[in-house]
Image (cartoon, rainbow, N blue to C red):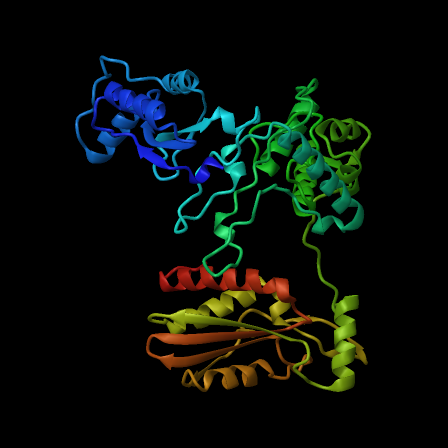
Amino acid sequence: PPDDAPTRPWLAHADAQANLDELRQQLAAERPAELRLTGVPNPRLVHELAVRQALEDGTPLPGRPTASPIGLEAFPALGEEHGYWTGITWNTQDTDTVDVVFVDRTRLSGRAPVGTYAALPTSASAAPLSTWATNPAARRGTGALVTKLREHTRDHLPDYMVPSAIVPLDRLPLTANGKLDRAALPAPEFASAGSGRGARTPQEQIVCDLFAQVLGLPWVGVEDDFFDLGGHSLLATRLIAQIRAAFGVELELRALFEGPTPAAVAELLDTAAPGRLALTVRRRPDVMPLSFAQRRLWFIHKMEGPSATYNIPLALRLNGELDRDALRAALGDVVARHESLRTVFPEAEGVPCQQVLSPEAAVPHLTVHPTTEAELPAALKSAARHPFDLAAETPLRADLFELSAQQYVLLLVVHHIAGDGWSLGPLAADLTRAYTARVEGRVP
């Protein structure tokens, strides 16, 4: 194959016609079976490449050449003149130039040659051939695959696990360690893919606008599917809440799953029940009962006694100067904001009940423990296993481990009766905002 054919370089600084004449003489006199002419400038790109080089070098831009260089069509004509099949490929060393391959037709027996593209040097990483080719049918096939995947996930997964986007990739980007490079993954582009019909009624227009607002899209058509555009169960909850507020009606979340288009939702608005009255503060009863989940945890606590089984720890490493007074005040702010963190569970006539303490009475005590980095894991483990007394002790404990004047670890332990793993995110965010405000001398 001509991929290992003898090569002849094109002399870039020599006269183009002289180059062509020397090539003609070689083909006529030596009659090589195969020959690869390398580094031939592409006359269609000569000026553009010169401009690019000038921009990179910071030199004046060149003018357009007055004389047209020899066109690539001169090489097939030369090959035909001397009985050669001629092919033109990109140069593997310099992508700004091309190679011209000549193969003696008497060796081909009427067949087209293969292997005309020279192999990359062993030190270079070869790109897949698909990089240099188009596949017009790929979009059609990929679209069908994405549709089937979306239908399959909806049929076999709960709503909250159905992916909001499916992005086809030729291959997954990897880091130098061979792991998935998440930063290199392309962001999904949710484009409106429905019929494109615009709204016909004011209700449809408002619903389309709410769809677009929740999905973060510039426009949504009335027949566009909410979930095909990247919607998921959490966004669906937000959308239904906004529709309820905008129209003052009671609309079930189920309605969006059964008819996930603006047209289907707008059709339900005329027959939807009026919205519920806004929540108002009511006087609490003297004895507040426990919820089912609280009663279950209280019963286990009563049977087994205080233990760390249902403790949920959150450790935060703090670097820099720490204002301990501001931290104590911030803990009080968080407890004042969340009643569940200042609720105890005593018994009234043998029945467990909730007792919400005042913010002043429930500020958690911040215990400071001087320690070292080596001792820290054991100290954290011990503090995280603090057994809560739910009847008398608020379900939040705070310990500060001092490693140095500039390094600390804050451990917050919450009992499961007052929160869960998801609650740790809002807890940390609220504490951060409150501490920032206290350091600045203001109340959050």
